[in-house]
Image (cartoon, rainbow, N blue to C red):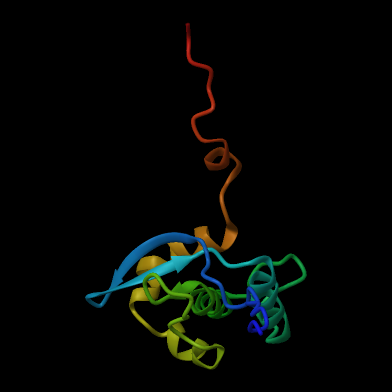
Length: 127
């Protein structure tokens, strides 16, 4: 008698690496979030009244909270599918000095690749 087939659910899989960064002497991965994770960040910002109808932060403090939410969403332990922070730590992350250093990379990972970077070097080589 053979053992029943075991099937694995593809939940909790690793995200696409955007860039590895060093924060306070340790390496962390900034990963691209899934569409569902992006929607969760935007929904949380709307629920907290941090985002206006134009999908922009209502003020500077709201912008920092949004960036903290993105950091919580995108920051992983290197080479794993394990996030560094939980949603409950957003307010603490907002006050960390490293957030300002990596906010550009976080925003880029959250937004995804631009059309130019997706095209790559697609120019025709002269013959």
